[in-house]
Length: 129
Image (tube, rainbow, N blue to C red; front, side, top):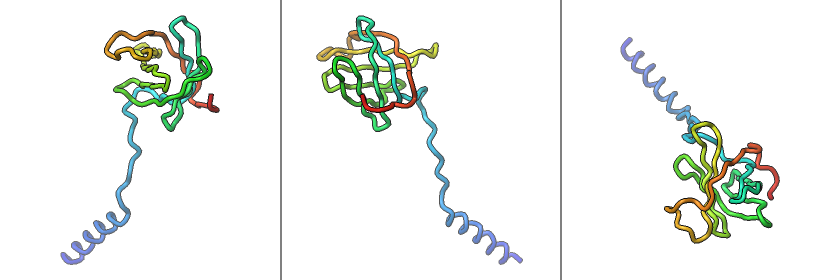
């Protein structure tokens, strides 16, 4: 009887190992999903559209278009453009978004060149800008 219990226990362990580990999808540790279309505002309040793609590329339609990349920076999303602009998209405690931008050559430890609201237009980034 004891040998049968041991065999059954070994069988259960081997069977469990044969199935392999169950890989759960990691839960997002971020407060919002950045991928999609956004409305950002320039220093003078002029709106422009930004596209943050799943492959972490970014583009806007500002003055003929800006291109760059986005990445997480703590709980915010930093968008770095090839023309030298650097934007930081943040979810505020009240549920709205802000976009702070630093112009080319500005020290990122200094105050932002502009600090405006941002609006999510869609969770779908849509066609390239």
